[in-house]
Image (cartoon, rainbow, N blue to C red; front, side, top):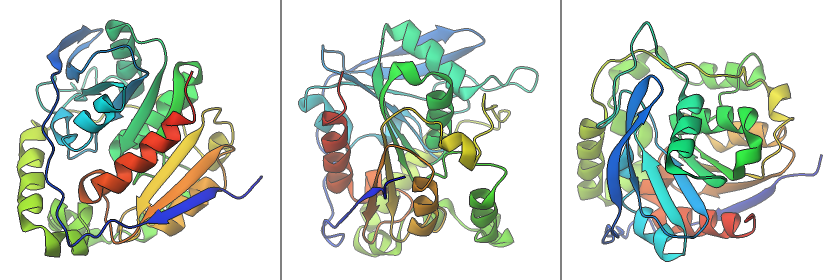
Length: 283
């Protein structure tokens, strides 16, 4: 297997990036089998890009991405998974499967093929979807996530580096890097605000359709972009390089000084890297 293509680049984290004005988008509720999901959709004839949010996020968090990807000519879509902003809770008797919810949403929206762009827990859903429905993906971008890798050395490493005290520490500490927190306290507060609004309740944990082992990653048939922050406490570059060893067609981008949320901490680099990648993997 060829070594993964790797990119490292830095936008000065000491210069906060203002949130751009959003473009017009349709908002609504998708009535799907077993659930109701909130979404927004900028429309248009460009190749669709669907954003999948972290566990701490929802449709609300893509403020830096929505207008940039739309102005680049894409139909931009984001949705809230069950248990997140304006979507239904997952019930214990029917928690559903996140990747099948996504497939039902894609059908509801009339999307045939799309680019999936995900962050953190959204990456588990996106990878699960890529394993089940590769024919519907133009490309897969996973930022700050171990691609739901289970039953192997990647999971063992990820568990080993996370201390038992993690649950007692604030999410901003785990998900925003120290350079960003030092340079942009207003951005930290905005991130906290969106997190508070995004997570609506304690619904049941959703299932995955596939057991994604390192061996399973080797069967991925979708061009894949891996992104992580150099200061990510959860998915550091060492773990992302482990993952890259097992994906046949991948590129790797390491974002200097960023923590677990490059889409928010270093949005210009994140957007530029993803747009370049998906631009090379169209229909």
